[in-house]
Amino acid sequence: MDELTPLARTAAAVDAHVGAMVRRRRRALRMSQTRLGEAVGVTFQQIQKYERGDNRISASAMWRIARALRCTPNDFFVGLGGDGALDPSEDARRLVGQFVSTRGGCELARLYLALGDPFRRALVSSARVFAGMGR
Image (cartoon, rainbow, N blue to C red; front, side, top):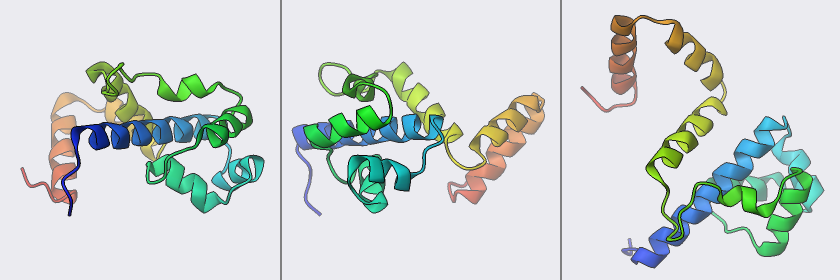
């Protein structure tokens, strides 16, 4: 596997961030990938690739996506610094946004917040085991 240059890593991070922001907005509007794809003129598989950051979104596609999601292209870049790096607080917001936009994420967050501290620690410990991270 080729080592990515710092510029390539930054570009890939920006693509992933923009894709995550598209996904967050689409889910907030309760729009399917299929419906967004139809509005933009691409397949739902292409929307999946955009949202994962696997494929870069061209300027014209970004414009169409923003119109379909009733926002501006600038909204997809919120949280990125001038160097393309995420502000640590924005990175935390992005992670929370990604988490609650997954199936069951919102419910799990509510349940977690309802737990007392000893149960939260136990849940985190269990989650590490499930994720294969050990202790």
